[in-house]
Length: 249
Image (cartoon, rainbow, N blue to C red):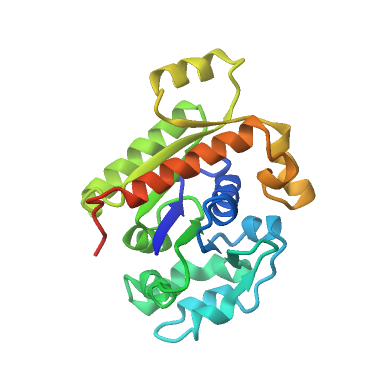
């Protein structure tokens, strides 16, 4: 089982769209048994997939208890894609993690289902905090959505600096540009400067995900946007299956 954290220090960068579409394509096209764990109290990923939490989500982080993680997981509409949904109880999760005093609680919860899934996609709330630290310890790869603004570039640098200082540079980070509009000079210049970074075009089709509560590949399977998400999933798979990939301890 490999764990993919979709994380950004900044909100409003299309993080949930990336998490949902990556998880959906991993399950439906890559044929990976996939769990999408919505860790954001807003629950946007859960809403997009029309999944209700079966229990209060933060109970999973209740000290040494929390019960069986499988009891919190519900199937989606798509075979091979399950969801651990979020609710507002996660708003107090950082306080709860302080009280639990267990630095690898998230990793331990995930270890309990290691034989059930090939891939776990974590839709993470923005910003550094105790939950982010748990995510960094558990993840095999961070997918970092960024817009084309200078502020997003700075957050990428801050994430790299934090991982280098506190986590020995691990896990590796795969940046992806979102909401890309090639009609804008700044966007074209940024793409020219970063030719190896995947770029998801700005599109009304992506916005329609929230209207129809469906992943993009279900709304527009042959669109350029879906094709780019497919290429992103291929890049993720290559990084996760590369020989010699270090495993976090």
